[in-house]
Length: 130
Image (cartoon, rainbow, N blue to C red; front, top):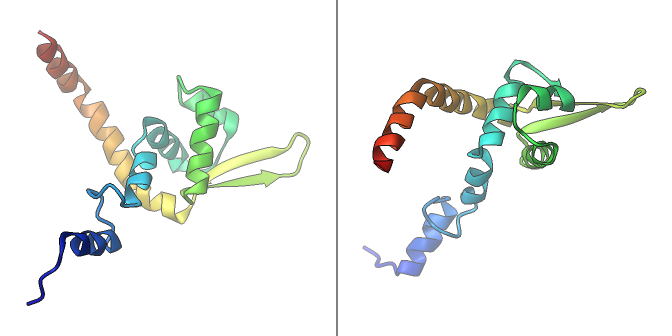
């Protein structure tokens, strides 16, 4: 049996994408996909493509800047696609990619869980503050 150093074990874990390691690139992805705006944008696109203004109306409380940043991050990570149609005015539509569709089930489960348990969480917060 071969003895491995801690550095070797970290290198092996990094090669396997161990999220608990600080250097693991999966942490960057987790940061993107766990944001509240990311979840709401992906859930909004569940039924098909949408234009920017339709997304902005659908997701109450999101600022134009935050919506733009979220859409760019999701497009960068391959979770949504941006389709530009040359018309007057130019039409831009966003839709889920295959990768984004694969994540959608998890996102919808999180959204459903949050909506189902909001009262229990509020009660826990209230009792914690007392």
